[in-house]
Image (tube, rainbow, N blue to C red; front, top):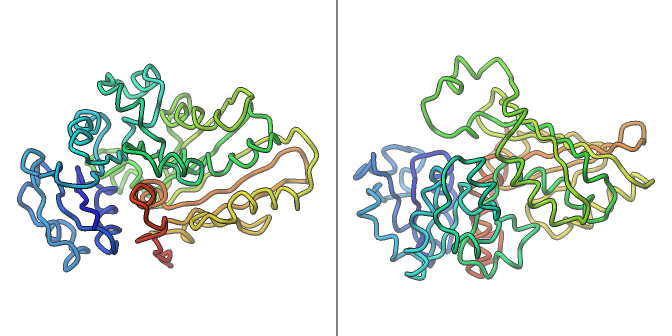
Length: 345
């Protein structure tokens, strides 16, 4: 059994990890930390886990994290880098759901996240945790930087086109929408029910921290300079993400060949569903699952190709993807503990 610790178990990605790992056949939940909730039973805070998780939260200094095989960090940026070296020295693997080990460019990290990076040696060996594009490296990794939710949709949607050299890499446009849970479990005016419901708004239009992360990864797929205009939006639902990706074709290609390109790219992927050409995937078709669904469009059979991508921002966009990485790191079938059918309605 894999002994698992979770640092920061009270947020949405933390409880999503608990929901998934509580029924994972190869996992023993060993420690769940929360400084504020020290001693509180997990099931008292999250009744959905009654009878499934018997642990209590413990303060970080009381948790025996070095006795774990792997520790997930479901914490704000900066926490994982402060503890990673000690855990690695004890033979513990690290999966960070924040941004500490996503960006290889330290200057870019410090610019976008506003804190110094204090763990350069660990960053050097960290592996970007998007299994569908980086599986081999993840299998041998000790440290994983779990991708952001928006970047997951953009990379999966653009990857086949960039690899094939079919699109102009310098004019990518991503129009993306996320449910309110993407902002985390916190008291903040902008995500109060009366502020976020019955309305929709864009944010981070001129600059968003997921842009450099996405560009850094997309650049690995092409020799051409990548330029991305990414606009995120907040939509009035709890969970779910819909990304509409635009690209301009450089060469003539049939719609059938475009569809085949994506089907070939993801034919062996357990969690990627390439829908029929012209489909309109809905966020509810992936709710509470680790599935990502996408569909291709080409208005008027012209030079513009559109990729529609949906996922659950808390599962494939965060905790489910992290468990995918854990499975790979420990030699388990990648789908272990992740075959939840989406919840409908």
